[in-house]
Amino acid sequence: DIQLTQSPSFLSASVGDRVTITCRASQGIRTYLAWYQQKPGKAPKLLIYAASTLQSGVPSRFSGSGSGTEFTLTISSLQPEDFATYYCQQLNSFPPGFGGGTKVEIK
Amino acid sequence: EVQLVESGGGLVQPGGSLRLSCAASGFTFSSYEMNWVRQAPGKGLEWVSFISGSGNNIKYADSVKGRFTISRDNVKNSLYLQMDSLRAEDTAVYYCARGWVVTPGLGSFDFWGQGTLVTVSS
Image (cartoon, rainbow over all chains, first blue to last red; front, side, top):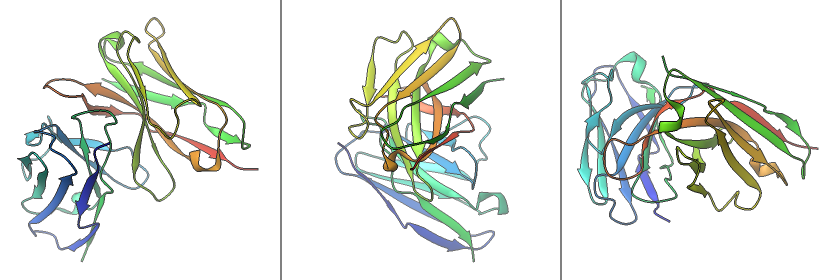
């Protein structure tokens, strides 16, 4: 199975900060990666698919990049509603597993 | 508007069974892959099972293989997860999620239900 390692697992930041989250795959997955945002008590929400394509309705301050084994999710200017946990997911092969998550909290 | 509504969760004893349902609306259900994903209390997301639009292709996580059965009824626009031989470690919120294939690779999960809590405890 392909393992996904997210870093950091916890991040403390202020409104307006630029935030970058990394997801590393144990083997190459081309660009078959998605990013999700989850707020407490809510279902995850798809932010980015195919590593860098923004899902409809997602603010442009979110962006994704990478291919192969290393990927990043960037929030260009953190907003109050962005404080949440973020997960990457590989979609190269079964099982379509998730990274361990990155919790973004207010500094 | 796409809607996915899970039901069927609850408290069950170890070794027991439970059947989850996910009622879909707002899209052509038979045209989409569907998945079950779970999240143990305070933990991350774990993919559980996949079923193709026709129901002919089914996959399971190793942790549930042989105990859980995914199925769908494209007439009733419903997805199911039959869970047998339940263990304490199956305690989680279970989400159904639509698989959306727009690029090569597996479909990303573009819509999710609100989740249903399954608690396995004596």
